[in-house]
Structures are given as structure tokens and as C-alpha cells.
Image (tube, rainbow, N blue to C red; front, top):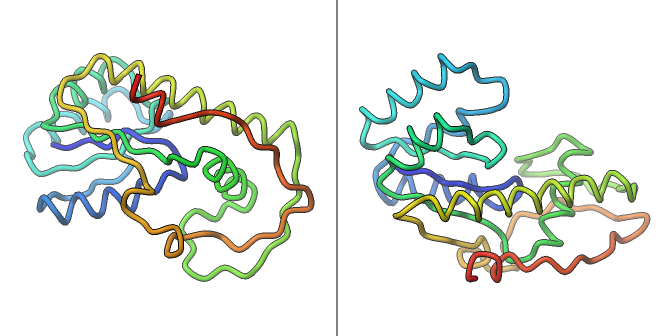
Length: 181
């Protein structure tokens, strides 16, 4: 089993599909969420541990002791996947949450209204997620960190076409430094 520990809007679906194809694994998607019952978590863990070619995507807010010990610590490899450009990720997360558009191929240009409190809440969520991933990383052995920008040229990346009424402020949060310290 391979696990990709990641955050929303990091290019994680792209990287999971790429890893699954590269290793001949079956990408099971985001099978854990806050509504997943303990009995279902145990069944998924048991299934993944008996299936050597499973690939899971896990967000840090869904990691509990069962998932940590049953999946993350038992996986062949854990990939921590993120974006170097934290501000672009925050914008993308805000837009996706607002529009409920996560994987659109062709989307018309949209106007996005900046709500400072909501934007900050999403920004804080992503920051807490990265700090939790760093904490989890220190509990694991076979971990590799990757960044979306290492796989995509900036010209070819997926980006929802939007026009902001007010450009969100830039925050200094260095994801690379977080994982290199």
C-alpha cells in the first residue's frame, strides 16, 4: 500500500493518478473522511493491508490512531504532497469551496467576491493541515515529500478562470521550509 498525505488543492488527484499508473497500483481515492465509521475504517485498513497494490489519499484532518497505525505506519511508502505556492493554493481552495467546483475541465470565467473572514478561515485550515502533516511525518519512516510545481510547468497547470473583486492578501507561509526543517 502507498499513501499520499496531502491537503486540498495541492494537485493530489493528479499525483495519485500518476503514482498509481507508475507503480501499477489501484487508486482508491479519499476513502476516509470525518463521517467514516470506526467499523468501516477497520474494514478499509484490513482490505488495504491485504491488497499490496492499493493507493490511498488521506487528508491530515482525517487521520486518527487507527489510520495512523493501520495505514500510514504500515504502508510501503508515504508521499507527502503539497504546493510550494501556498497563496495560489489558498486562492484555489477558496474558489473551489465557494463554487463547489473541484475538477472542472472547462469552466467559464467567473467573478469571485473576496470575503476576508472566510478567506482567512480557509487559509488557517490549510496552515493547520500542513502543521499536522509535519507532526505526522515525524512519526513515520519511509516518507518522500513532493510538490505540484515539480511535476507541472506553470503554464500547463489547471487553473479556474476567475476575476477577483479584491485581490486576497499574500501571506508568508513557506511550505518547503516547513518540510525541510
